Amino acid sequence: MNGALEKTITLILLIVLGLLLKSKFSNKDQTNGIKEIVLSVALPSTIFIALMKINIDSKMIFVPVLTIVFNFFMFFITPPLLSFFGVDKNSSVGRTVTMLVPSLAPGLSCFPFISEFLGEESLAMGALADVGNKFFVLIFLYLVAMNMFLRNTKSESSGVGEKIKSLIISLFKEPINLIMIAALVLLGFGYNYKSVPPIVADLFDKTSAMMTPLVLIFIGLAVQLKKGNKRMVFSILAFRAGITLLFSAIVIKLLHITDPTMVLIATVIPQSSASFWPFAHISAFNAKEDSLELPKEKRTFNLELAVLILAFSLPFSTLLILGILSAGKLFVNPTVTVASGFILILLGIVPNLLGRVFVRISDPMMKN
Image (spheres, rainbow, N blue to C red):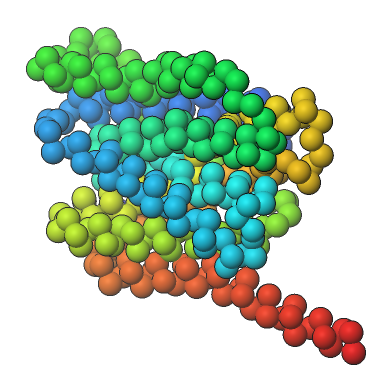
């Protein structure tokens, strides 16, 4: 059997294991505990090892910059494109989608596969890319959510400075960010992974080894298969994936990226699932509206839709990334990437357009 295929089957079986363990993890706190181990222990260890084993140069500043460019590209094109799904951009649904679609969560949906298929140096590139994404989801999207909340509720912006200060402090308290800063400082002073004491290196190696199985089991535990509005969410995610593939193809062409590994990195990182951070911002402002006793139909965001998008985005992105990397060098061909992008866009918009046409045709018939 092909080595890549064997690896893919193994990874899929770990997701299936998570699905089979759902009944054992009925408490949401138990599932969140696994996620916390991944984000606070396994992933930081993996990123530290990856960064300490490569040579960092000034050219790598373009990696997080390109990620921010992608985030803002998706943020600005999402509102005008919502009409394809029959969604008003100024509605609670529209605002919720605008918050989630441009965000990325590579730690849970992308990094394990980059590590398995492309190696540690590629993972380090992915970690640097996530620096730009973190700025976008933690700071910019919080400000966007606050602005949406204030406009919707006509509230006063008291305490805004203090909230932003608190957010920035929390950004630097994240284990992933702290470990990245520590690794970059050590690299700056000429240290590498061989310079790390053997006991410390062994600790990082063992905690890093937990990442891939824990992430995949978590995906199986987190996926929800019995929620409503699945068709609309699937359409949005397919459309997002298609636009993202086209964006990657354009960037690869403009920057003349020819190395197969770099092409695959530029293709899969933007395919990461939607981030939990915009959901955290949405939840915070929803709690404020609870205290204001604002009726559900007048809320700034649709909390149930946000949960649904996150629940479906994780397995959707995971399977897409897994498929791209399992295909070997197939997606190094820009024609394949562009064609796949258009297919996903059509999968996203055609069912909705046909459904709206059918409704328009059936209404007069029902009246007659």
